[in-house]
Image (cartoon, rainbow, N blue to C red; front, side):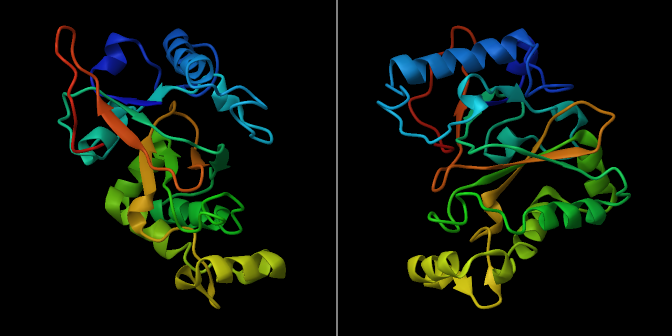
Amino acid sequence: LMINGPVRHELDINFSWGCMGPGWRANATIGRAVNLIMSNVGGRIPGVGTKAVHAQPGRFTWCFAEWEEESPWDPYHVERGFDRQDSTVSVAAPGGVRTMEFPECVTGEDVLENIAGALHGEGGINIFPQYGQGEMIVIMCTEHAKMMTQSGYTKQQVKEYLYEHTRNISPSLFSETKLAAMRKARPDQFSEKGVALAARPDQFMVYVSGGPGGMHTRFCDTFGDTWVVTKHIPKKGEPPPTSHKAD
């Protein structure tokens, strides 16, 4: 769950230090409540309603917000078509999370080159079997995001850079068996030059969150052919919308 807008402050949802870890009541409570609904109402019981091999810790609780005030770009919900003063919740289905740290980088391009390099050989489900489908979430710390704009990168240009630099992942990083399966499943998205992580730049979702003082960016591959859904959070006394363009 990724929260945007004024409700972040109203509910005291953490978007700074440790925003995806333990120790913050609102983040833990909201994430846990949603996961209890998924288990008790949706039937996500291990071995019964879900046959996940390992699952992941986010099934206990995973809720955080964007640090809009420290982001050099429009916040994510504005990118999705909402007004800045709107409050929204975005729901994603990440397969997990990896941390990337580049303390030696001094420019935005340094950071982007290292992020793209870290994604080569990615064994996530975005590559196969749901090859080139679904969205991937790049959660940048505020320092990395500011380095992007200081180097002249817009958010769209960040997405385009990551797309262009993960289009030809070396076939040598995959077994012949896997390569043969890729060729058979998605011949339109596979070439002898390499394997592409995404089919389009807009499959890279960029979100700014996390405390200052560290040069960390995190990457979440979503679960195969799944897409982020963003909903408006009504103000107190306001009727919920029946539909929205971001559905």
